[in-house]
Amino acid sequence: MNLFDQVLALGDDALVAAQRMSEWCARAPQLEEDVALSNIALDLLGQARELLSYAGSVEGAGRDEDALAYLRDSNEFRNAQLVELPNGDFATTVAKMLCFAVYQNLLYQALVDGPDAVLARIAAKAVKETKYHVDHAVLWTLRLGDGTVESHQRMQAGLDDVWPFTHELFEPVVPGVSLRAPWLAVVEPVLRSATLRRPLDGWAPTGGRQGIHTEAFSYLVMELQVVHRAYPGGRW
Image (tube, rainbow, N blue to C red; front, top):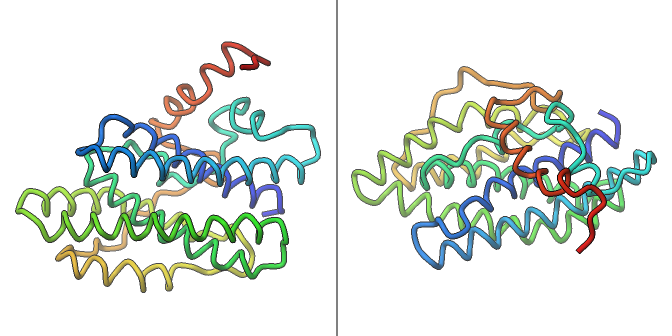
């Protein structure tokens, strides 16, 4: 990947994850969690804005963050399929949040010390945000996995559903950054503490980085872009 594609992929990950997380606003299982998930969505959106702005400047074609977010078709997005998956129930969202937040946190830690000064600056702020996302996801994974019989079953089912999509996270995006082993070193102890079984590795869907997405993604993009496309050039 060239630099534009790298930054675009990271920005798309954050943007799509933010859109999915924002769907929990006013729907979370308790008021405090409603606020927490909304704040996580805002953190992700902030990361997306900076990354897409940088991608636009690297591309040099006059596209800003809004153009990249709102004026691309679904097959032009380069996010991993994991972040576009429907939320499912709360346990499934927690499983997805754990897997993605640990990945993001490790990635941003690596970028802080990387050669690109702009990415290092963005990552220095994002690594603090994603540390909270990890802590929050771990808390809920333990609470649900080691809770009631039903919460354990739902948490395991959610983990089983999202696990195959985690493999795509570790396809090379940033040169020289390999995260699978350190990711497992964080995730596996959490699963054991939560009395959850790590799913077996097998089927591993891919293609998000090349613009191949799940059926649900086109609906997400349509909802994300509807206002901007309905009122092109609108200002508030």
